[in-house]
Structure formats: structure tokens, C-alpha cells
Length: 119
Image 1 (cartoon, rainbow, N blue to C red):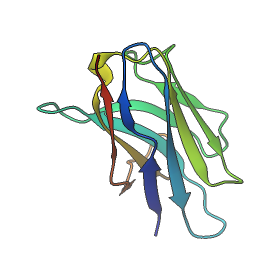
Image 2 (image 1 turned 30 degrees about the horizontal axis):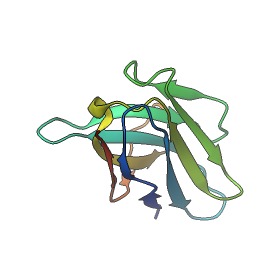
Image 3 (image 1 turned 180 degrees about the vertical axis):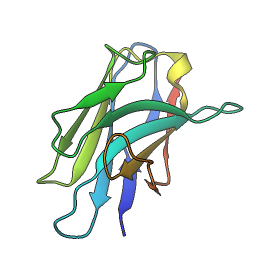
Image 4 (image 1 turned 120 degrees about the vertical axis):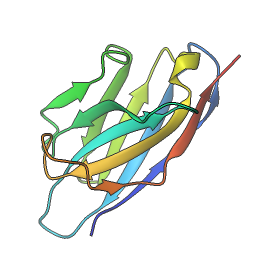
């Protein structure tokens, strides 16, 4: 069983930065790709970014490319989402999710963390 716990959300102003963390707990000798998704009020959940188990492969939604950076520290079992140049449109609940690899469904989900960008 894989468990994910997000942290680091909060209220920031436009142009600010924020770093989200996703603590990943998984059985020994298993590795998972991890992705970040977000869901704004009244909107469908959307993909934000993903990173492979090794960390060598990443993928980003066009809306965040160049502003957000996903990374992982497997020694700390943590995946990060560095968010720079935040916009009000980035306001959402952010979720991390795990899957066997980048092309597999994400079957394990965290509880989410709120990010609000407002002046």
C-alpha cells in the first residue's frame, strides 16, 4: 500500500513562490512515478507535473511549464513541486498521486493541500 501526504500549501501573493512537498510511503523495494494534479473550485481536476521513479524524466502541463519544477529525493521519500511566478489562476487544491510509471494510471492519492494566490 502506498500512502502520500502533501504539505506546504498556503496563501501567497501573485508573483510569489511556494514549494509543495509530497511524502511518499511505499513497500520496500518498490518505486513509483509521482505526479501533481490540481483542482480549482467548479473545475475538473487537471494534471500539473510528473516525475519518474529515477527522477530523470519529468513532464509538465503547458500552463505551468517554465514556472513550476518537479523533483524528488528518494532518500527522503519526498517529491517536491517548486512553484514560482504564481498567478491567481494557480489557486486550487493540489494533490500528489503515485503510479507504477509515467504511462500508468495514478492509483494512489494524497488528501490535498490548498494553494491560494491572491492580492
